[in-house]
Length: 118
Image (cartoon, rainbow, N blue to C red; front, side, top):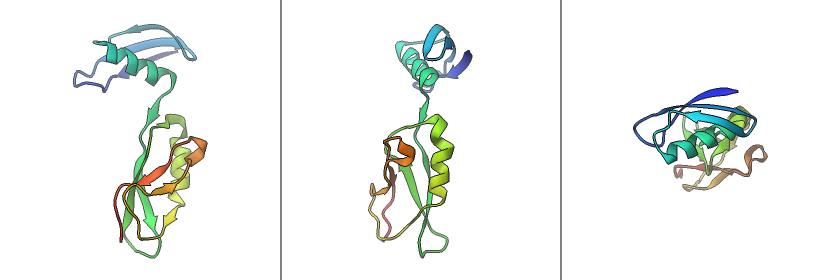
């Protein structure tokens, strides 16, 4: 499999071409530094993302609670996570960093509040 990865570690934005099979990288070209190699390797073998979104607040019309994943979530689980988050309603009061959903989609990652709501 071949994949072009645009590195986001620094402002250079190197276009790194990676070729591999499964989690084994056979070749890599276009990186400008060691950090690019590390980034492209992780992105090729196990891409993850921080998930940021909004959750409904129970009993409050129109106001939404901003939330994020406490750690990166595997990219292939993002849509499954969003399905759970879409169905979630939270009560108030809430403090920043309160856990809204624990261990979402069995990833070991919690969804936490990024704002306090009284």
